[in-house]
Image (cartoon, rainbow, N blue to C red):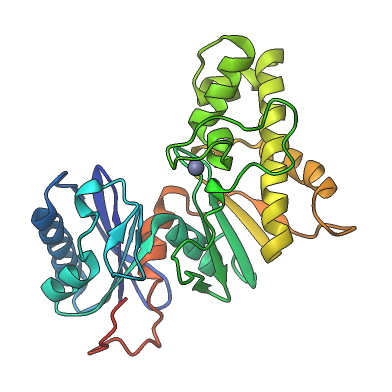
Length: 309
Ligand SMILES: [Zn+2]
């Protein structure tokens, strides 16, 4: 049995998967916001409840916003700020009596879709979150590519490539730079772009809906969004050449992206043909918790494994 935990800012979800990927049990509790020890305890309780329901002991993988610093082993870049600077994997592993693997939620999304989701069977999958932020994860032959800086796949804080007039230097980003991909392609980036172009303070979903109904200004905003997404993904294709790009997050539900973007990226990919597929997710919101479970393979020698993460 493999247990996946999706540690979010408002809820903690747990899932037990059989070794062949069937869902055995699920649990969900509210996240003890701001309380480190209570967060560790909540995960321990979910694991205990899942194991008691299914019967048996499982591997534990945890997906969360943020990453583990390779240098220090502590959590960094987390929006669950009470975890920042804490050795969460180590503390949780000690409380559970087994090693725990921790990964960024975008990496878990990419892994879930690569193993048995929309990217199943592909050698290289780039999973992209288009939502509050623009995270990303790379999976190569069913394994998450992490990298020595734990930032593999984090395309969202690269600069928007091939900028057009008005796109450079671009909006300020919380990371301290300007013109990051995220400032254009997150839900908020979409809304900001529309507001700057029209003065109309619509939300991202409103812009999408109105564009569907034929609103010319909203359609124009979506065309700008599609062109930017095409350029940003083309720059990723030029580096890792994924077989499949799976979109996740709220904007992955926008059907027109899957038609428009492949028509636009050919001008930027360094190849005469672009065979890369761009597809919607299979598991949607469940991908985080599924991917966390898949952080361990059935063949992993996990009992007594000293390194844990
Ligand atoms: Zn940034």
